[in-house]
Length: 158
Image (cartoon, rainbow, N blue to C red; front, side):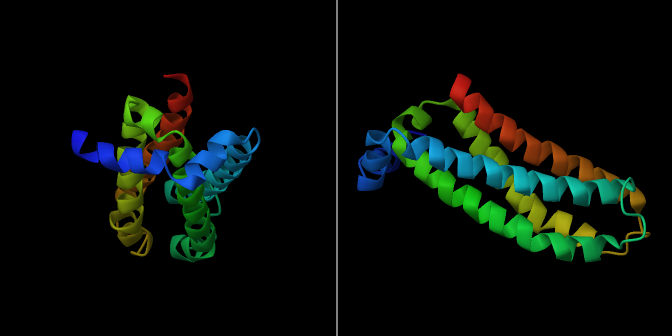
């Protein structure tokens, strides 16, 4: 982790970080965008996973629903990352010492990799082939994405 200290210091001293830190309203405004994007992402993920569990939209093929929700997932994820970088830059040194921040970053990386690799293979496979794998993938997806959100919440308290 010490190898990352210069990167954290660089972020903390950028003009973006200083501008956000010096403003009374920029941090809360960026955080609001971040949270709304997280809600959209989690909503799309929840709908898709409920379909994988067989709870909702039984007449809709999983891969069709995934294709419809994919732009919502991708755009909200990009907004989360962009707004997260802005929030991080204004509190980089606090984040450096924050275990919840480190855990959240690991969970976010894991959730993104899982979503765009193994999870995608399961979504676009024949959903009748192995419904058990659908349920396992849905459970793992929900745990990962909601843990990212909880990790973010923990940053403010720990």
